[in-house]
Length: 245
Image (cartoon, rainbow, N blue to C red; front, top):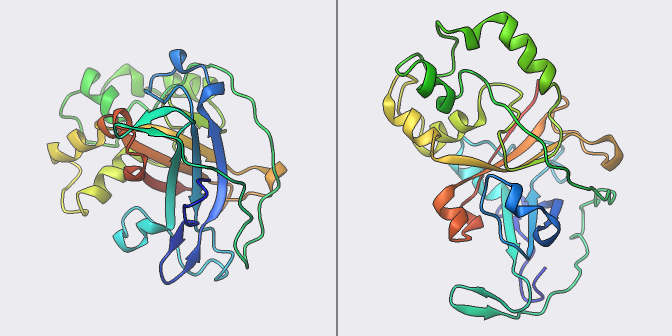
């Protein structure tokens, strides 16, 4: 972390747990569908319930809890950021008192194709514009045969950078859009589809036995961001949600 940066805290609840880091320089950025920096590090934090036995939850629909998840971007030395050269000193940081760090599990990345649900807003817009959001509609992509093949192709959540999220429940883009719009729109309101379409997956992290990570009932964590914020490197504007079965 930058030597002068404070550890992320959810005011009134306590410090966030460190979940994962991504070394952007080691990713095949040219092969990704999102505009990640070519260097620098992304750090992911969330309030995981260690300090209160899971009483406080970070929920997309609860604005007061949004501070319970954070993405920090540490620019590489010499990288231009906000029209200034990023040369801030960085240092390793220990976890705050009361937090038990997760075991370190090195990961390697591979490029792979991802798929999304037929009722995802982007797919629905192609095959059935105006069909109910989040539900099946009258098209062969919603047939059980196609769905079975889709699940076989993409049958586990896993960890993911960019691409389509593997939502455990309804598309996470809809969940984020509902939260941003304060839940004041119905699923047949075109504003919800428009808002959902503006968010892309930044990262998802599955439950991971090797790291002693269990998100709810074998769930996953998701961070999404608007493309314009990604281009401007405004990672602090990322939105977080989690789902479990």
